[in-house]
Length: 169
Image 1 (tube, rainbow, N blue to C red):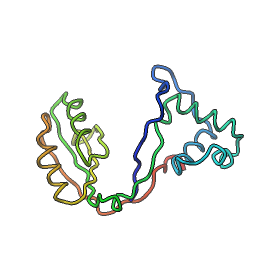
Image 2 (image 1 turned 45 degrees about the horizontal axis):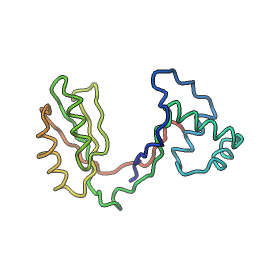
Image 3 (image 1 turned 45 degrees about the vertical axis):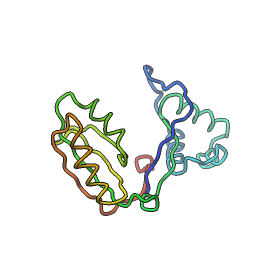
Image 4 (image 1 turned 90 degrees about the vertical axis):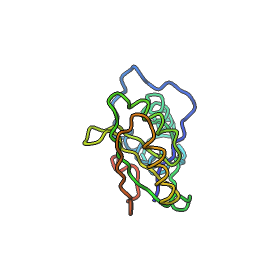
């Protein structure tokens, strides 16, 4: 299946501390097109959204400056990249340990995404590993040894639907 590997754009103002302008129809179309193909040219983007190249360029720059676009991505075929085992790992953690736990999770190999949740568990981690042995080592030896982690539960992923950007379609 595919996933996105983000690359941060060059340092620019993130828009933090100020309100972001509401997105209009062309902004949403631009986001949908960039999610579909982050390598698309401004010319092609303008043609698909039916606006001028100057307008498309200005809108993309504004979306980056406002922090709406935080990076541009490549989609990865995980199996072809040697990551044949995917799983979601839920964690229950000690109260007030989120910052330390999330920082340590972010440094582990094969951890693709970490979310703090309001659920029966506190953290959900998406893991993509080469095989079940690497997954077992990651969960049983590395994640469970992080200070603040109380329990884990693992769900193997059998299949996935492709596709970032469903919200913008």
